[in-house]
Amino acid sequence: MTLLDPNIPDGPIDSKWRTWLDQHSLVGPRNRAGKNVIVIGTGLAGSSAAASLGAQGFKVKSFCFQDTPRRAHSIAAQGGINAAKDYANEGDSIHRLFYDTIKGGDFRSREANVWRLAELSANIIDQAVAQGVPFNREYGGSLATRSFGGVLVQRTFYTRGQTGQQLLLGAYSALEHQVAAGNVTVYNRHEMQDVVVIDGEARGVIVRNLITGEIERHAADAVVLASGGYTNVYYLSTNAMGSNVTATWRAHKRGAYFANPCYTQIHPTCIPQTGEYQSKLTLMSESLRNDGRIWVPRKGGDDRPPAEIPDAERYYYLEERYPAFGNLAPRDIASRAAKVVCDDGLGVGGTGRGVFLDFRDAIADQGKDAIERKYGNLFEMYHRITGDDPYETPMMIYPAPHYAMGGLWVDYELQTTIPGLFAIGEANFSDHGANRLGASALMQCLADGYFIAPHTVTNHLAKNHDPVSTSDSAFDQVENDVRGHIQELMDVGGSTSAQAFHREMGHVMLDKCGMSRTAEGLDEALTEVRRIKGEFWSDLRVDPGDEEFNQSLEYANRVSDFFELAELMIQDARRREESCGGHFREEHQTEDGEALRDDDHFAKVTAWEYGGESPVPHDEGLTYNEVKLATRSYK
Image (cartoon, rainbow, N blue to C red; front, side, top):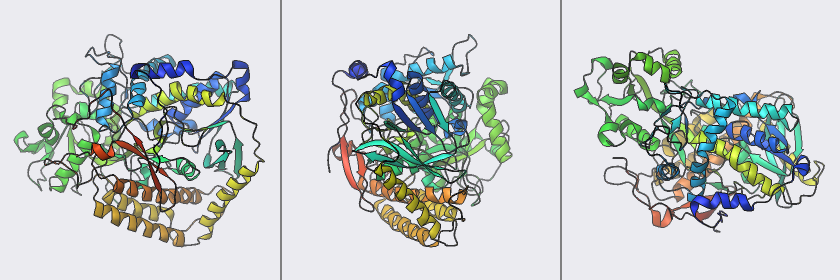
């Protein structure tokens, strides 16, 4: 095991990024067209990075597996984006956003990165407004803000419940502007299969054309992975069905360390599962918790219509247990609290896995029109899916897998352990520690894409790189590996679909490596996942035709990586003998059921080196100079 160096600049925390910018290497304008960059993914991080690098004059290739960059999963983000602008005049500041993010992540984040994120947050809003993103505004014309979980100020900017969509359209317009200028080429319906490493540096990728099945080679001077998160490992999640871990996992197998894979977030406000036929779950924005009150009947089995249950017989469990934050308790705490009341037999709905999110009081206080202006599209979406009108009856919600705080390990420059390979947005192990505060994902993606990666990638491109041809023997080797893996999938010749194996593995992961974990359960999970993986490789059915459009092959290819990731997640959760944020080990909790950290032994990042079934852990110690380690309390 080695100790990882995050390459953090010296000096006071509020000047580290400025110091780094003043000292990093540049590429002259006339030389930029001779430098090539590959960006994988076209969500907020990928589109903004590709657009920014293209605008600087570099030649960029942008890849997405969707039919258009606009279908990237960032479009599904609903509630808002954080920024320390203090338009609400509450005393918010860079330091408060920094501290709330560190505390929300249960003191498992790298201080320097989080400060930079808070520092750049204001720039993001200015950038988006300049692009025409239609943020909600107050009556006087100023941008509107609202609260999200884990904070006591209103710093979340929003466009009703469509914030991700509108921000992505802004980034997409910037991307297409660079396409028109000839600086960026977009490859739709192309999926990365592997990264090519030459002389220790990332110099290209192998991709598969999902329409023709053709395997293609692309060379570059730097590769940026912006391929999103991996919570589809649970099968049912709020992620788009195409979201996968393949790009980052294949990079991991080439030498990029994978950090904190056990840190996954279960979102507290999702529409509950109604049957085994479902292949995904629908998120209801956390912003609804600003005005909705969460409760269950105080008596188990109370099946009266919610309107007939008087307040005295309602258990507003978040308000009672966490009076300072109430319904805006952080996501990990709110999710576990919902699980506890349902496990105690107080859950609602046919499965007993549901709680009420009630807008009765907000509508009475503010009027239906005011609630509609804030959440109208969310209420409409819920009505269409469930048939219930949230204006008349409470929403029913339950936690669901949502976001990955783990990902490829990166240093301060967002560079992985493979020089020239960068990971941004949800693809890296992020700035969120063990739990992401709501409205921070969009903030990180755009900070990485617009304001950090363009400089750190430039710093790498300023080095002298010998030209690389796709005829290099390294491309031959990696392409052969890709073709061999595809052929293995095709040759199994079994009778069971990849989806069936994925669903079975997802049940195991959610039950034993989900909202709560135990040593015994994790050991059982590892055995079960390996058993299911063995059956996958002996009984998988894939439709014939690897050199053509073949969605069953696409899916099987992604699931094969999910199996390996699941093993690493379990091993990481087993090694971390503490509870922190979204990682809740039942053996490590306080008397009143809260997470019990072990700062003496686990105030660190664990980054895993690929080693098959025996991965090798490497640690990065976390130091806290600006905040004091404290038991996280929202009471």
